[in-house]
Image 1 (tube, rainbow, N blue to C red):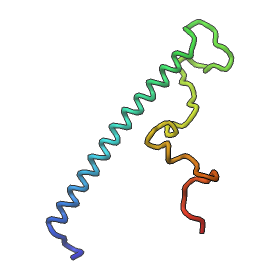
Image 2 (image 1 turned 180 degrees about the vertical axis):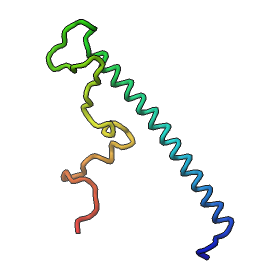
Image 3 (image 1 turned 90 degrees about the horizontal axis):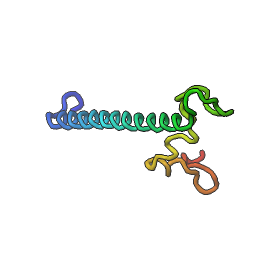
Image 4 (image 1 turned 60 degrees about the horizontal axis):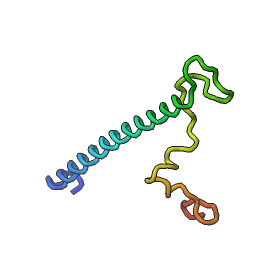
Length: 100
């Protein structure tokens, strides 16, 4: 029965598609909220690090007012959902497929 399929199968596929679309929308919403939070943190750190207007900058400070400070580490190294995935295992070799 490759050509038709039952109404029940079509209903299941429709339900799965609707769930997938909902998950994608939730992921987009979460990503937007996280991006906004990270942007606000970077801006606050840059504003706290920059001197008041008119005061000279110390050597090595960002050149433009409000310029964000560079990240010291990638975001996923601090995210608790991913921290265990990027650690080396014993012997310093990361997880991966077995050697041929």
